[in-house]
Amino acid sequence: MIKEFRLPDLGEGLTESEILSWKVGVGDTVSLNQVIAEVETAKAVVELPSPFAGVVKELHEQPGTVVEVGKPIVSFEVADDAGQAPSGGAREAAPEAPKREPNLVGYGAVPESTGRPARRPRNFPVAGNVATRVQTKPVETKPVEPKPVEASPVQSEPAAERPRSTPPVRKLAKDLGVDLASVAGTGPQGLITREDVHHFVEGTSTGVGAGAVTGHDAATPTAGQAYPGGRESRTPIKGVRKLTAAAMVQSAFTAPHATEFLTIDVTPAMELLARLRDGREFAGYKLTPLTLAAKALLIALRRNPSLNSHWDEENQEIVTFNYVNLGIAAATPRGLTVPNIKDADSLSLARLAEALTALAETARAGKTSPADLSGGTISITNIGVFGIDAGTPILNPGEAAILALGAVRKMPWEHRGEVALRQVMTLSLSFDHRLVDGEQGSRFLADVGAILADPGMVLTMV
Image 1 (cartoon, helix red, strand yellow):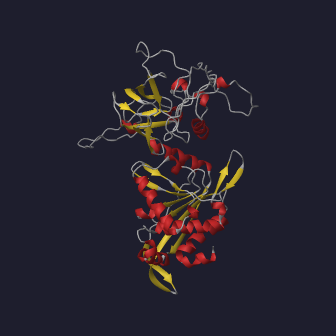
Image 2: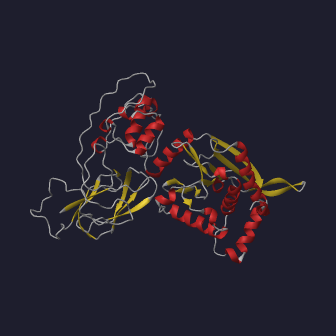
Image 3: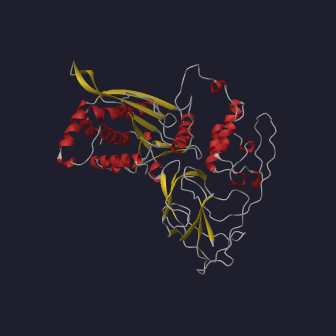
């Protein structure tokens, strides 16, 4: 019989993935849980295991194609329950009864359950991790008549009249002020996708159709002027860039940012770093200014817990974390990612250095898992590696603070009553002013600076 494998939900509510490469071809025999493809979500590159053992009958999507969750990507010819091929050799027109199949990458196939009644189909989109097709009734959408926005009592409506969309898409529409009832869905069974919302916003904001040419686009080069490759190039917005853009917009317009700067003499910290590198205890570990700054941040958080918190809008609560998942901004070929080190506050300096090295290597290789990209509580971005002194970093959504490390430079500096050439760094701290008052942010930044300016200050803080 023929079995279709639909793109599963790879976690974190992701609604689409790009097929990077196929590890199998038509006619290949595959075993259960054999890696058949490599796909890229908005967060990570993931290997996709086969949920069936059989022969590859058809590859529905080509590499480079962005596929929505729930769409078939490959078909297999497998033995039926009795271990024999179906009679007639043709695919049955009617779908089979729903069976439990794997829905998360890395967990492998799940045995089919028996003796349980099938659930009654509902009149809203079927989750993308269900491999069988469920018939649903089409939804009748009523045209939306323009009318002034005014407060009105909430009225209960049938579930079928609710526009078809996923929770992330509804959140995006809410952030952008879009009424989903006005958006035409292009996804399966009229599902409204992120692209539909963005296209609706672009159309309403520009007042022109998708194919319209603006004055800038219509400009022509002057005589004798040549542009290799054309006057402009266009790159599809997808993957990490797409997720990063949405996250930064959400953060910038939901959390009131405040940024403070502190320039310090870090010569003692750099001298300590040199001694540690020469010591036997740290042989084989990669120690950098980032290592010391991360440790200083973790120590300072003990006295300033408000910097390690989260604003829960839905429940109207402030959540203070008693652990630290330290996010480190990493520039990768796929774009900016912020993987985090789980329970970083429990690590020694050596183990922290080891974790930072592993995090950077994994990120550059594009192998960071979705789990390592979620759950962060506070972040560091090291802009000093690019020769930058200071900046105003944007918070990771859901976090209260982010610390930017500037470049370490030799500069004339007042030292013991005289001007001397010292190693100087600027720290930039952005924080959510709903969670962190100016006093709290200033004390935290001063504590981090005090540790880096005089590592012996740690004795007064722990």
